[in-house]
Length: 130
Image (cartoon, rainbow, N blue to C red):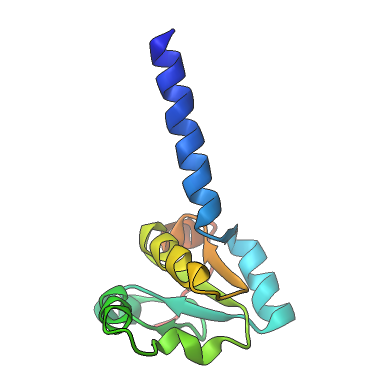
């Protein structure tokens, strides 16, 4: 009985954290958002990973760079795109979730993240460019 309660509490906590991290998109929903609303895709992976393959027209802003800009208290490169929907992409979804939570708590709107990150994009057999 206690194990069931613990499992339920963990599942609820994971669900709440996932909701706080912004709206997640499937790869197909992402392509629709890009085509319909001219969303900006921000790739949070390192430059070398980005150069090995990324979503078409994605802007590379490595997580470490964003983190140092954010810690310095100044403007981050993400704020350039406040007038458009922003879609955060990383390798598996953890870093994009962290960034989405932070910028939404600071008042950013129209922030999305690719569920499962670029791994999910590749699993859906969506194209990458180099």
